[in-house]
Length: 305
Image 1 (cartoon, rainbow, N blue to C red):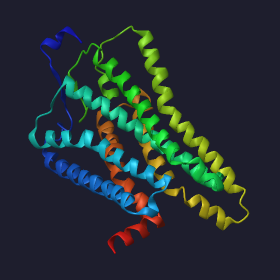
Image 2: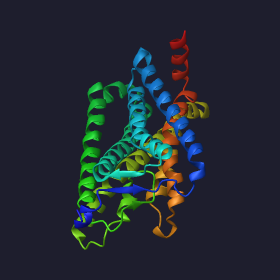
Image 3: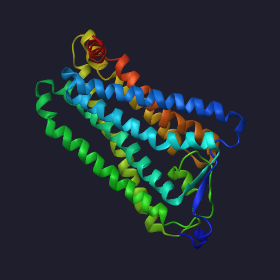
């Protein structure tokens, strides 16, 4: 750490400080979205656990995604709610880097789970007779466990490297500790090897799920186009509609947030996009998977009966 850490033991989160008159409205908005997110995702998890007909690989992954979404939102929203209500925007170094670690780990796990679910849809459509053999319980467990190991190591690398950097600023123009925003506070550092490691490792971890999803859907589309009936083609591809909707929502916001020219950087837009992918999308996911899925609808009816 910077020697000036003797007088600075944490950061200040600006959050929504430029609109103090909206603090109460923002608090109620965040609270409502958070409650809906937690309630919706926990309901999906309980539904999948309690209904035997949903104990299939696809719904196991949906249940995991629901738990990850609740965790992802819980890393950010409670601290933001506290800041809006109390006006206390201070966060310690330890608290900030813990938030960075879990945000990176769980956020990337969301991406890896979407890739695993794409593979599940590929196996179901392209190899229906061998689907249960390919997506065995052991395979599902290995896919999820290995994903957690990868994102854990990735998150550890970035958190450690960011925590030992020298900082030239202590005010974060955001409502949580996000790595790109923290990097804006780095003092000039000529450690080219470190930057190269971060770039290569980060690019590999972030883009691997994207390429995997694209490859899976290319094979799925090729298999669907081989079907002779247009009705069969539509019925088969519709099984991917919920997953594809979530993928488009998730990656469209992530790409805009993290892969855009620095010339169009704006703290205000960044906060809005962060709210979308960290709060709104996790809140919408349970509704997307329930409203567009006949099996989930029938399971809900059986649960309430």
